Image 1 (cartoon, rainbow, N blue to C red):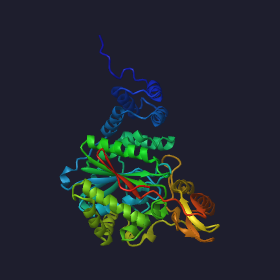
Image 2 (image 1 turned 90 degrees about the vertical axis):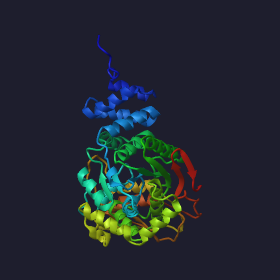
Image 3 (image 1 turned 30 degrees about the horizontal axis):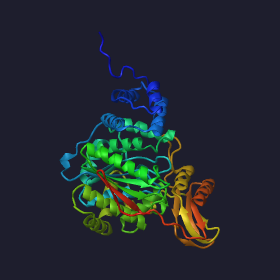
Length: 454
């Protein structure tokens, strides 16, 4: 008499149907479906249909735990315990103008942490850290794990893309989600982020969860749910995980576009840069020090972070990082070495009034339309294109005043950029309603602390 195997009835179409109808899949069934996708028994179109079903129906806690476990187990998990000092990373859920990692990683390393940062490329309308780093001439994000470990040991931080050895299931699903419009799903976002981060051999993790109409999860209740979900996953695997809810109802900083954002990050490392970018970097650095148990309170950590940033030590660390990963370290002193678009066209206000809104999403898609983001998997991008904003919500402008500059590769592309910028900036006779606070909530473990209210 043969013994029935728990996954013997795993038929891909049936798994998709059950999830489409909101059923909870058995652990063995879901695991076999996921393994089947890795070894070719489940086709791309079947996984695409499954992701869409999850997008609408969600996953139970048990299903989510299974997904994270299989993602993590599909590749290697690093052991960095020999480093001695805390290993703490930061991850953002994605925003427009979010160049925080380029400033934060060298700053946190200068403050005594090891920062093994594994980042992604642009996803949907949001830019990716890897694309910004690769705007630096020669910078390599495709390091092997041996090279990654060496840079981390020598510099204190290393910034790479997801290697083939780390969570390969997530690597494939990440691209498929981007191509099928299934990015804004809480369980899929949580599993994707946490599988990569748990594979990094971290002591602690700080999450920057974006909220607002430019975020993948725009509403505050669902953004908090995402933060709590990821904190729960991290805690279950022994990684101290906290999160800050940060505003994405407007772009972060002034620059949107890969090389332009990298230039703005260098400006911030020199102690200047937009106030909102600087403030967020310092708050996240302080949270990393507390999560890594280097410091016991945020206030002390903030003072240390500010001194390191203003004293130029973080910039020197960034220069070492760029050099160690094959890039031109002169960029830290001369950002004009970054790629520059041949067209720079201003958008002028058609009337006077108050800037009531600078919508991030049209700008993100505008960069994509001009060639700075991917419409298809594996597509090459132009790092030079994008926008530089001259106004923020609440500003009073006169007719004819420059609202922003479109950086484009050709006149036709510049016209697309002007249309995007025009649709993003709203001007009214009345002052705008207050914006979301830059940082509204802190999540530590299962506790939610309100830091500021809208």
